[in-house]
Amino acid sequence: MACHSIQAMKLPLVLACAALALVSAGCGSHSLPPQQIPGVSEQLVTPAALARYPASSPQHALLDWWRSAQFADPVAFLAAFTPPVRSRLAHRPAFGEELDYFAGSIRNAAPRILTTEIDGSRARIFTKIAYRTPIGTMHFVIYSRPQAFELVRHGDRWLLADDTLVASALRQRNP
Image (cartoon, rainbow, N blue to C red; front, top):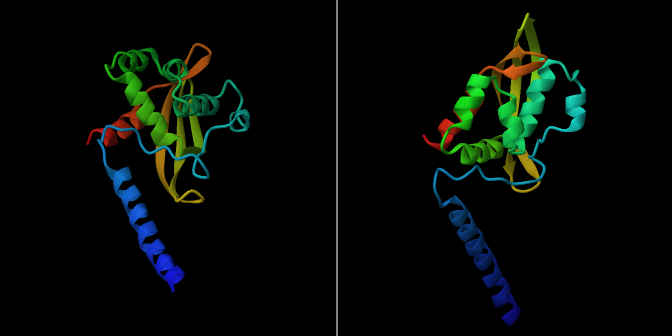
């Protein structure tokens, strides 16, 4: 009979601990980076993904920038933009914190390139960004959004002409 009482007490105790963990995880400031849960939901750009496109292509430039953003590499991240955008971003007082936030917001996201339009020194890449939202540690759900990226040829490199996606993510940080 004593064993049955202990077993009966275990379930409520486990449920109470789980509820406490969920409540604690929800507390905090809106300025914290998105929750960074490694595992099946993570979608980091790999060398194989980069190798699908020629190194001199706008598609390769976009994926290379995406990787630098995912890894919060400030030098490579900024170098992927045109000089005016690069300067504006680099001079933001909270640039480091904002890059960390943006990196966390896209580690579970991957752009799928649908089409690319190139007109001389300008390119527009149409993507579908798939975001994996973790459910526990072994499963995730996917939602997606279309996103176009504007690039310009600057010398022998393709550079991002705007920071629309970054700005959109940062608005989520400070609604």
